[in-house]
Length: 355
Ligand code: ATP
Ligand code: MG
View 1: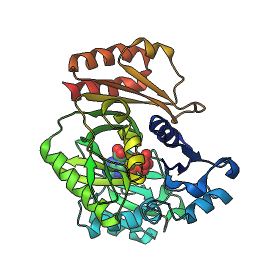
View 2: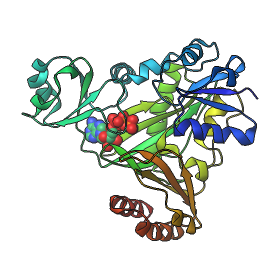
View 3: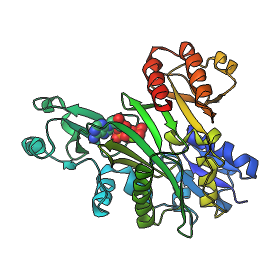
């Protein structure tokens, strides 16, 4: 098996490395401190776990590498402006939007998009950072330098958020997981629930949308599509050309995890549709210390990233998977006193999704 170099060395790179190990695939996440001598990059296939990576002599070398899969897609999707233009070009429903280039636009923005506006940095935002929620009269609180650097979107009164994780291989075949239901708080994913049999209409419509995007881009590997549910329709929020936080449940709840699926796709290995026969809940651990008591619950899989704990930082996740809803509910109820206040509403939300 060819080795794989991953641009970026966060938790996604770590989990790609873990997924490669049983298959005999050596995965080398590349961060700022990577030593070129320790990385067999000439023989490797190159991928990325983030849309923009630090520029070092080694990462520049990898960017030029002839085996860098999807190279030209990263700059396109890392910038919200061309990403939104792509969705418009494909006629795929997305939150209505405009480029934000001058303060003179505000009357026009409110006239076209309504009174609840989300300003998003084109490049570099994540976990809700680089975003401002604006109502008429509040626009002068925005920093002056954002003009030209942002887009504006209509605030969508969604009833829920879902994401679809899918993958495309070199021959153009696509496979998908069941939709994941996601709860975000302060722009950060807090909890996900994936049911083995999702709503057929939503699943089908999401698959059609993501397949159109994957094919248009000639993409190879895993991509995530985040959506808002509005009425009985999906609006695309954003795309991520990589493995995704809302797909972490697949580590324990699918026959092939998103990490393994991505490695299979980029290495041109067989890529059957992953089987999912159980319900999964994923709890993101955000700014919390590790709590060994979680391990007293037999269904809990702890994935700890060994990062320094800081507020609002993703430091791990818990996966809980079972085919018996009652067992999942019991586990969530037992977990609730072992998690802080911020998790109490998310646990209620997940219990409702399971009922
Ligand atoms: P990620 O960490 O997923 O990359 P991000 O910082 O890139 O997140 P978005 O996904 O654009 O940001 O937004 C984060 C969350 O903010 C969304 O999941 C949703 O809950 C809310 N949000 C974003 N855009 C809108 C919108 N147009 N209307 C309503 N809510 C929105
Ligand atoms: Mg998002």
